[in-house]
Length: 504
Image (cartoon, rainbow, N blue to C red):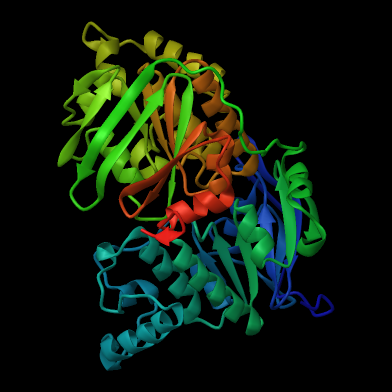
């Protein structure tokens, strides 16, 4: 990267205020052609707001934007696109009933005479882009038939339809498999080679240090500085983001554990997983680790009554259970914090109080109405216990940071007083500071006697919070490790199907 060249993008003294919140305060930022520039900060630091200003979604109250040294006023996303600025959103914005091609060129479909769509050109152009992305679907595929990961690739394909000057990637790997991440990084490298400036927003430190040239940090809506990636480290970036260092060391010592809370024997669910056996004791965190498709989430869904097992037994405190629905699981003391908090764990337009009390609202009825006092008391209890940061219980959950949204979901299920708490991908899309808070919370819950199951795709997370780790490969348990004995190499071998030096 040659910073002697003129910036592809420059933002000067950007200010953006929402009612009661100064989201951006005099922020300046620049990215050069062929540079991958990371933008980092805690949830709520202003990253997405800054990029939405750049992408024409929000208009700044003060400040100026320059694209290749020419001042630009981004009034709409289409205007930003016309200036060569493409925004690949973290949240999917696709029309599921339309084809891939129609989504990729939405609003700009090629036309023949009399305004008719030129379908042949549309499909040919889209297939050429998909070929670059090395995906396994075509331009004619209905978007609703694709996995979440492949839908993310459709979002990325949109950026390749124009002569982009700057492409903004907002948490692009959140839903991608390891193989798809490799393809994404190849696409980014190709854009770099073409002189495109890349803004890369991610909470994943390993990605930041792998593909970026420089890192800029925001905190509380203010610019905190820019560092050359090769000249800094995770601890320095973390301190810039949150103002303190974090203990991210792996866990090697187990606390006191009690009786077995949950025991699973020979559990199977068709082709999803087979002959699964493990137990979880009171005061213990058991981590599940494996590649995408290993069956971890499906096991959690079966324990929670979302799937029906084809074989095996489930025991809670030595009593065999037959769980046919989530209602039965909750009644028996099993709660599940799902993988996708926004789609499965929260009602984003509903306030914080009502989200936390939703599973037990029928128990809070006073006469013909739900007791407001009882609901507020429950919310206050878990707001204080989990240190949820929100102006009021009346705030819509959709306005909270990712870390605080996750605490709302956890609080909702803790309020049901479960014996077993299952947490699937507890820190997905959460900044490093909030991630540390969630890790401490999970350990604290174990210390209070809860039996906790943590499913995670991040090895450092599993090593940091778990007392024991269940390593899975293609629907089978390969090995169960104690925290004291596990090594990264042995864990990788187990989840890769290697057993005693041989492929299983």
